[in-house]
Image (tube, rainbow, N blue to C red; front, side, top):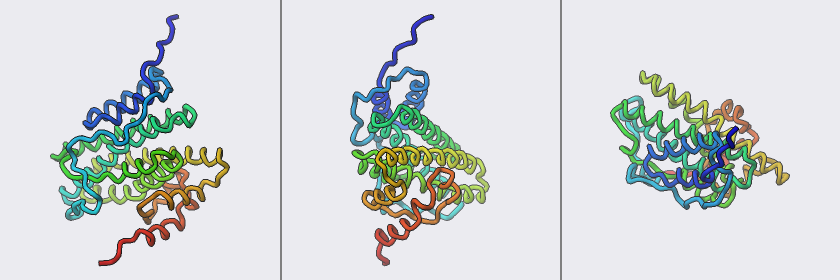
Length: 281
């Protein structure tokens, strides 16, 4: 029987390659290839290169501060639906980088299963982006046609030195927010007669429950090793490191399915909203 081929590049190099792919199509292909090669045993579990401070970005879409993002138009109009899908596309685009940065930056601090799970998450984010990009094309638009903001990556940069804080804030706050807002988005698309977009968003919502669950599971594992109570530790890290607000209403059932129970976020929302609320004009 012939010997098994030795693994080639390291998983860190594969993750870095995804982060340095600025073109969206190239990023999707790199993400899927890395996950596929890992499953086939052709990537070594080694962390021999550093992750870039920021991922490569193309000229489009233009990135604006959140406060300068243009307002969306009339609810249910084609323009508004394109704007909503474009926003989702950008979230999924950045989510690819978030998953691969998590592996490349922190993977050596966890068992191999951490790498396996987050590479799968990264490949699913790439699939989500591809689905939304194709839907935009069918509606006569493209990713990059509208501006976007980089708040997701700013949270990643702020937690670049702390795996526990990264898990607390990115999957357990920012991605969990998607569980809250996506059902209403689906209802708006379906009310406008756009059932195809609604089906794509339903698929994304189902997958994102698993992504949040992955964050909760590995966050809990750190807390177990450090003999910390997960909910109290999460609240402390969010208070220290999250600049935004944990906003209701919450999709309690989806959060519960992901393991993000109400004892984590009950009471935090009210505190953060008061702390970060903009003054009335």
